[in-house]
Length: 438
Image (cartoon, rainbow, N blue to C red; front, side):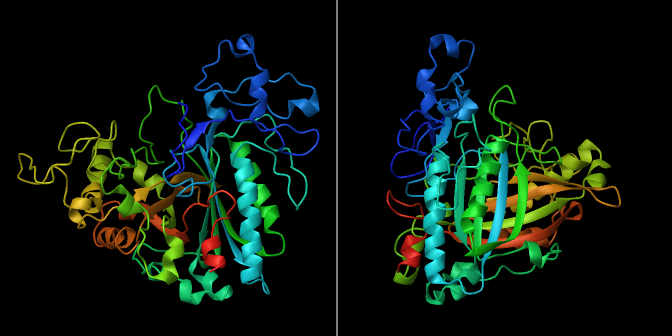
């Protein structure tokens, strides 16, 4: 389904139909622009959610431009109050990458890097070539539209010492506590800078990853990188909550943008001390690589899996009855007098009702990194959750889960990170400018 352009107060997606002239240099045409050359006959038989889109760099290749499907034509806005990739609908492909500043790189180099990254991210998200000071566009995403590409930037705790900005590091970036399910690999955790890339096309997503890596130049080096995926838009007969690799509907209890307290739960409000004012409109991302022990999980009967989760596997409805959106009845008991939703069920323990209203916006990707030497799949969840304060969101919920979640024997937390994601950049600004030029 084609997405509408957001108001100036936020970021979202819109059909890509604006003129792309002037982008890309001589011989190049915006990936968005060429839809104008596709007439009604060229669009016959296509399901289009917009009159916009693009065919690729057809002008430089002599090809006949053609209209895009809705998957390719949707565009996320780079500029806005919040960065894209937080409330953007789940995307089919994702890359997470952390960088460390190189020795000798400080605040000046970091500011120049964020300026370069922001400029190229804005171009890529608009479906334009990635021409920059680091060289010409690689051509990886030729023929593709924006495909809902989002690029989201964040700063880790160590970034502030490396840039001489320790006094501007907010308390919400204090280290996460250790949890009993942690088996963390330090080499795949944390980092000075964090980038989240999402798109509905794998080549568009990789194009952004490769371009941003090149743009890092000598200022920063990759610390770790992870690849993820979700169900492709349009793969089901109607929009549905995503499933994870355990086959469970995942994300039912997410806060909804239309809820009255959504903004205050997810985004940092104004009014913080001046030193942290740069985070206004931003959010905090907790990133966890959670391996699912799928061989053990799949030995359980469906009925037992449902008891572990507290929801029906078929449709995500609570075991207390109703549909996926029906509120859980945590007090309902069965004929044996025991709670219908077990006391240690994952859905019960993680519910806001059991955590003083603590909530976070979960926006994960699944991952599969091959088969281990013992024959088990190295697969699971790239868990990403967003909140205005992790000490009122992720941490109290994870502490509760750590003390008796029935799901714990089937998962292992292997990497972790916490990042401050500043608000979006206004036109003419770069992400993090209010911090780096404070």
